[in-house]
Length: 149
Image 1 (cartoon, rainbow, N blue to C red):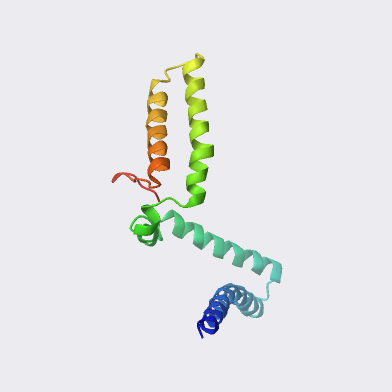
Image 2: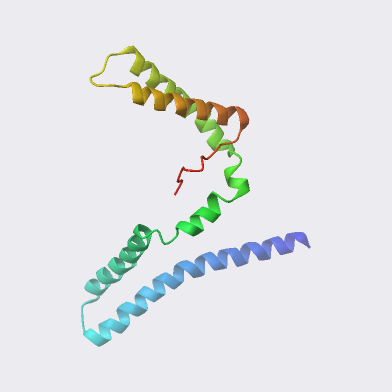
């Protein structure tokens, strides 16, 4: 019985995903068809207008931070997402980020560069310490003043 419910849930989920995509396509085609009849404009021009309107609206809403509250609730306030590192994030921090940060710190301390690198070295030390703590505890800490989105 559980297997049947699982298959039904998967089918409904796939239906919902495909309906979302096809609704965008059919809305764009309906828009093109209506304005082709009303304005008697070539369809490539209308297609370009539709694509521009869709992407322009998305970019505008993104610049206005329209989804910021939803992103905050979905990430920062999600106790399961913020409190623990996923396995892939842990491995990436341990085997990629930390060695690169340590190598960069070594290079900064080893070779003379033009200008003052003390601020960069200090920031890099703080980053290494935070990454090291995250790898050891399998958790990450977001400071109250840090904006993750």
